[in-house]
Length: 367
Ligand SMILES: Cc1ncc(COP(=O)(O)O)c(C=O)c1O
Image (cartoon, rainbow, N blue to C red; front, side, top):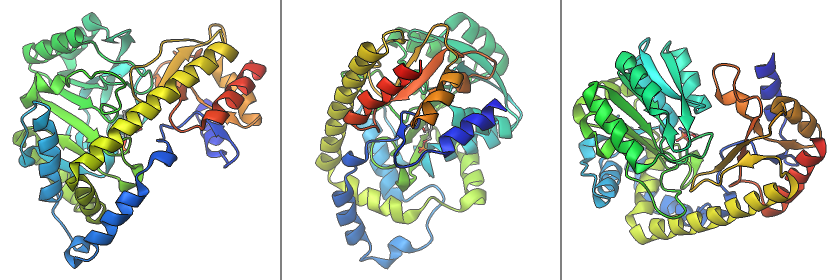
């Protein structure tokens, strides 16, 4: 009942709704003109709209591999599988590990929990502490599952980042238990100050590192990837082939052309980080001014501010705010049990600066 109620509300969003609900980038920052120029250039060559290879176009795989190598994580094109967004990466992995057990964070990304459930993975949800998953219960769980799904950078939904110490401890325990890590990292390039190394750099042969251009460039490209050892990638390529033959090669070629000018992308990312850091600060100030009972910590990157309204059922609150044209996601949605009843996830990247104040004032009035 409750699930369908939330879905109904989120589906009722109109152009006039103030939405803090989705994980959407700011459209005003899409590099549309640069992408248009790339599209014009590549369409001169008819081979760009021909069938292509299942692993992805070699030149794009090489660019992604170089991006890792430049950051000290040595990677070859053969370690990259291009997917239709990182959601497809999760789908391929779920098929591969079908019906097995997997340790996940609690709360976690809705899209991952959905696909794990469809493929009958048995999830063991372990609470997130302030700087990452709670270590002792995580290790106990890992002994049993030997497979973990984590989002260590600006986690969805909590916005949390794992400390370096915790990353190291997790890596050593993955080795100790001969376990495999699925590290989902679509927000990693959206850091405000400094970044932590991926856990995968510490366990390169027992990890899948998932990336995406959805949050940094444009979700409609539908381009993500998996970085893993050739041995781990091989069975996934077979699933990929059976599923859709290959990821949209037109957008792969556009992206490859766009990335060819390295300064263009670097400059775009810098602009994005600066803009999002500013928007997060503004949103945080609006929350402190108009909704002072909302308890939260500012994230160091990503797209979400997550927190708690003690004593308030946030699903009921959403019912009221939605009637007045303002929506967010109640925390309860991101848990498998009945937890998170007082929690809320707010997206700060997509709403305009004007609508932040207007929307949060409405939430406060409904409260
Ligand atoms: C943690 C996480 N993983 C994966 C995805 C899927 O992103 P995409 O398929 O657009 O790359 C999202 C989207 O919100 C996400 O938050």
